[in-house]
Image 1: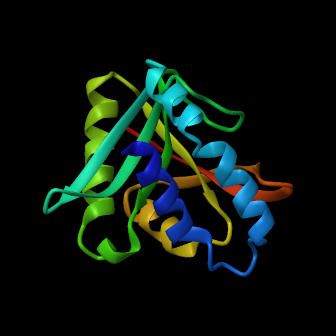
Image 2: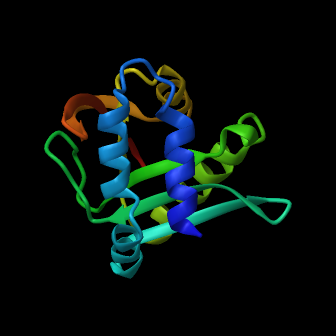
Length: 159
């Protein structure tokens, strides 16, 4: 279920954006959301997956990585919000905020001091959502979408 949910929600979010070449998107998705890759992530004890449901149907998910850190992030006990996606048909129904609240709760319960994430520079809707939840920009990094080096803003918030 996680493999299909991850693939579908990423596709929902990015396949129509004019900055994403179809070949680069397909190459990234084939690697990042293969059954083998998702199985490896699920088997890694540092990863935490949270699934949101509406009416018994998976509506979105989040992936946290305990202890992950990158240059520019100031934390002693970090947790990365590596993914937070919902199906487009559930946008505006609180799926993202419910997942965000659950991520904050999980991070605090684990004793983490900072949650951080990377968000695409051309995703202003997500940037506003994260800002509304207390995140601030602290840097940037390169996110490779297929062969396309894209810029992600690094954002963090204290827990």
